[in-house]
Length: 198
Image (tube, rainbow, N blue to C red):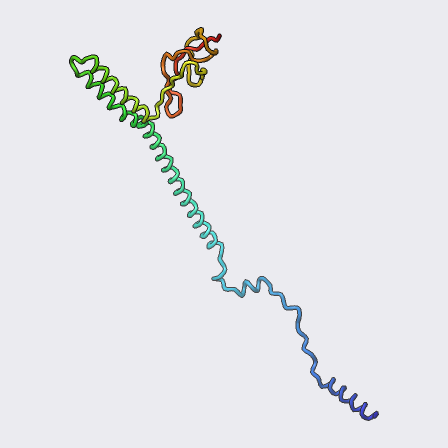
């Protein structure tokens, strides 16, 4: 029994002596120095200062070109807009003038008649008035003709005088002259007399 134990002990000791020593792994890896990395990379891969300056100058030139193009385009738009405004002012009444030409033609034709009758003159005036009213409607020129008893509106009516009347104060009694608006803008107020009140 003792012999077996001693044999086993000898085997274990022999195994321990014969086993190679375990390899120790180098946990801490050597740090690479920045100088070594720079030396390892080829010089052609590293941009030098002159290349960087050249790239930046090219970018500045590109931005300047873009700015100049945008500025020129802005100037062209401003100039075209100014021309459109000038043309709009110059030809603003073109549509109204086209509508008024037939009215002038009718008046000239009426004057060419040597001895017109009263009926013919009246008929010509009525036709001319219809043409004129159509021209006004086409160009959004509407009349202001308040009815008697209507409240005085200082935005549309101009009171010439106050007269005694059997109606509420500050109401229209008579219209002396019609007023006009063009496209909802006052062109001329209606001239009216207003009641003084009861």
